Length: 314
Image (cartoon, rainbow, N blue to C red):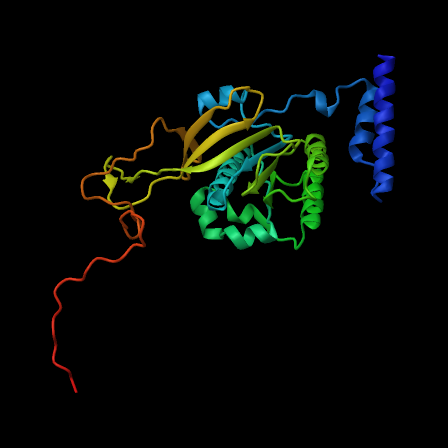
């Protein structure tokens, strides 16, 4: 016990030294833990924080209950065209978190920290779309720092303040100034404040980080929109479907899942097999032009049909 108390005191002193070097006041967490240690009470870290389940039993079982609410969860898209899927999944998880907090009587805001380059590629959140997706726009805050260093500072301060239900940090690719050291700092802040940080990495490769969970996200094929009578609306697009792969988790196997997000119920539903078969003559909405495969030559348009000759008006 004496050795544990001595180790804690050294940890408190180290935190205060780092705070002074950074020009910040002594962390309030260190003072609270010192007081708790003197009174013989359990510290905040020793109390178990409930996780956020997806509501899909196989996935929650693989995650040992769900997402940790005091750690970093990374949503990664390997290609730029899949950035919407990574952002959409992060927003769906945030909407589910807002629902759980509203049921508990807590109405805390959500902070989205956008990346300057990522905003040019994938756009920024749109308020009416947020409502349609299941989020509350009145509790959604958006920040647009000009530089990555400013975004990291803002994310660290926002998580440490514990004023937000979750902080979503958007990062484009694998920048040099955001590596293992920076993610470690954010992870420590999230664990100390007991608040989640969702990292949305657009068009980035796998790299070492302090994220407790990393999900590779791809868009899945959506079916037709269901109608109240059980039929399908022809030419429509149904609920979004995400293809998830557990890249980093406590489960050693790289498991994959297909999840459908219902914005109205704010729930995930498992998808066993994607519905790629459509009725005869039915094309997908916004399908675009159908071009034949080229055989060692550029594609040439087919010959036009019969031409009608009209008299000139002048």
